[in-house]
Image 1 (cartoon, rainbow, N blue to C red):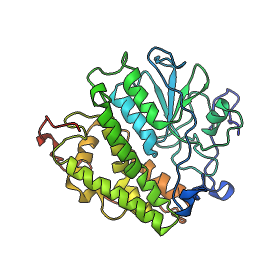
Image 2: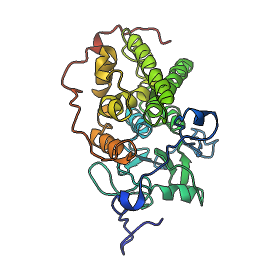
Image 3: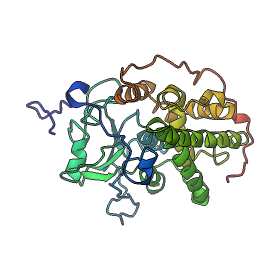
Image 4: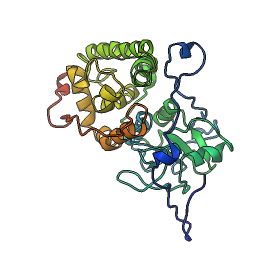
Length: 345
């Protein structure tokens, strides 16, 4: 798969999306083994796991201008990196570009369009080219976000949990000193709640949506709402998950909440309740949305077009719904009234 360029060497990007010619990207059929017996969705591996370190001991030193993020506004894992980058004030330290949210069988692609564009770093037409440049013959899953090392010409990491932690902790020389998303004293508590959120909420909605049996679906959707019910109670006395301070845990929960009523409720059948049916979670989500780092990295057009057009098995007509109409910014969230000193655990 090669990049198309003109005589000046400028990238043209990928040809238009064509489902008839290339089909749908990915394969969500159940894997072998115990999970296959319940037809349960199994997330693909994220094999590139380099880490950035402030002292360079990992081989990837924290430096300004060296790294680039390839993301999609549609992908929750990728949006997390954009939120953290913005919260920490690292926009001039780590560059970023956005792929087309609509993806056919060739995978994520660079095309000019509203909110996305061509690859400014390598002139790739497809994100697959970054993987092949890093590991020739790579045959695995192509995912965003990708953290790219412009100096070494290779992927550092596509393991999304590591990327934001490294942004949180290794770029202190350039980041906003007033923002501590992963403070050392709270890391055990943050890690604990993040694990619950990932297993039952972030990944739980996918396990619900791509389940291939009633049993697997029921197990997944029950887990989603069991944890959302617990979080609703937790947020009754805390402005944020850890209390009065915004942390990595809030970023990780937000990206699922932002997509919940617009996509997951219908498309993934997580339809026991809507986000808007939870007074505390809905107020909390609107509180986060009031912050530029969350609001300006949330593109509902990309989110809806990606899920409803890309997942042909779930939505064969590829029709994108007009709704729902959600008052993200039109009503007060009232979260400031919560006590400022709350237990973190």
